[in-house]
Length: 350
Image (cartoon, rainbow, N blue to C red; front, side, top):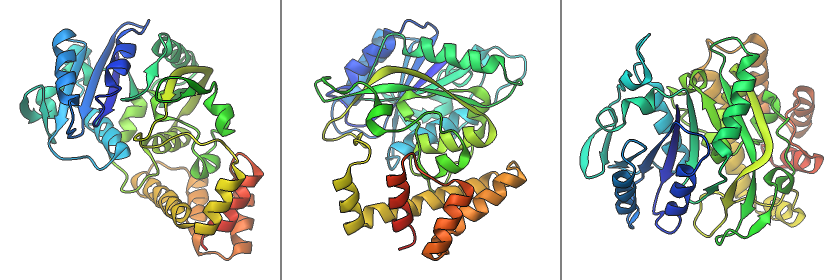
């Protein structure tokens, strides 16, 4: 079974389209869990409607306190599922969820344990979804096929993450770019830890993870760039990353979505960031904070080589410019283009 986690907040304008696109997937065995982050619009009522129309397929839960953003929302949900008590030999439908955070769901209050169907926590695979995108009909099927082909060549219990390309569209679903990979000039083949430390190429809404990967998500990082960047780092360190080259969903850009897609290597944008610098510096601060969280949370699991690499990485902000450049090149902390890597060298630590 596949559990799809949808993070919702004031999504009344678009969430019906997204829910309908997930429910229309060619792949069976999908259960949708929608977590509403204290919406003030009609999102909760819309979700209650879907719960009533699709009992056993849709579960809606409502947080009593705001999560603090998309990354915290998704990682919090994944952590709750990862902490589920899965008894050996017990079927998915009988797996019990042990959690404590308070939620309100479809008109009543209680813990996650009381609200999530036991089967959702016991799924074999987990996918993430924003509230305003639209899935193409074969998205889940193609990602599952990619995942299972990948797993066939792995030792049992190996964490795995697969993701896909996507099409960038405007608020009315008119295509802006047929390929996010090409639009951003990013390559899914860049799966090495040094590369992913400085530039994420995994989009949360394109992700499927297996259960061993979920087990890595019990503890939350205090700092991360985004939830998808954290997932990519863990998969690179402790498992494998696969991808589907086809765009499998429509990534909707509009005025209120959390993060939009920007065309890669925009020279004017780079000049603006160098002149202002505040946003870029905050991004780099979180990038190094995320690496320190990786060191702390997985100190007993990282290899000697990974520890050496992370030790070198977190020291970069304290180095002079020559030392920064030398370390970046020595360990391969490079972005996908030399223009972006140059910008990184100029901004870090200044």
